[in-house]
Image: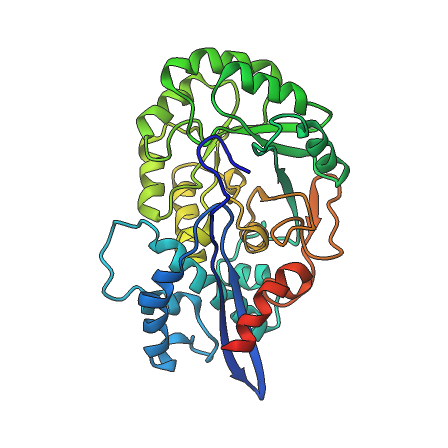
Length: 365
């Protein structure tokens, strides 16, 4: 399958386990890549994991002797220059995510409670809004799009996002095929050309979209600001911005409007929860509400961030048969929401087909 910009056929992913002996038992903290990005294996193996393993144990724990994700980030970022973030944030984010899973397990808490404990917010809660991401381009083009959206609706989703290409005729055709009782959003993957934008926004107006995602290339803040004045629906962007620095530039120059638009920066791709919490605080200082934040598809980990930080909604592929689809085994979507289970850590152990990919990492290390 593919989106309007790239195909996923050759895409890789990274998985990580941090293992310790604790009170006579072996405990593993897991992390798995965010979807739609290449793996970070070389960066992890050659640069960041060696720094983590070489660090004195006392430099990786908090005052109570429990592993500290922030301390792990400080250690692995030693001698790294500011700026030039590139793929680095995703590699560091995986280490931080595994440390969070491990920490929450040692504390006996679901991850969202451990996050709320550290970055507390009155809006933290176990029940969160979710939306389905589907409608990728496949062989046969739009033939199965309507069925895919209806299956998501049958699963309990009330908001569904589909891929479009920034082309009026084709995008209108896809939206007409997908339209049912579900609220729709579209993801343009930065492919809307300036010369076609006016006609395109006008053509999409009748569909009353929940949001239009990434109409401009991620770092073209000037074009995004122009689209912000033209749009017929809220804009959403940020999944390809991987740092506090990039988020600050988005806030300064992207023309997004608090109270209307959404921010989709992904903690797993952006150095982790610590950096993400700084980004949220930055936007709050600029007049934004936490309800504007919808993390890109970091899946189970991102759902905990939504719950622990009191954010708007989490994203997932609706098919639970996929390791990176659905939610935890037995967790059902009800009227567009889920309740996170009372499993320690992220709860990867509670999604059998995903845990089957992760468990060997702990066994081999």
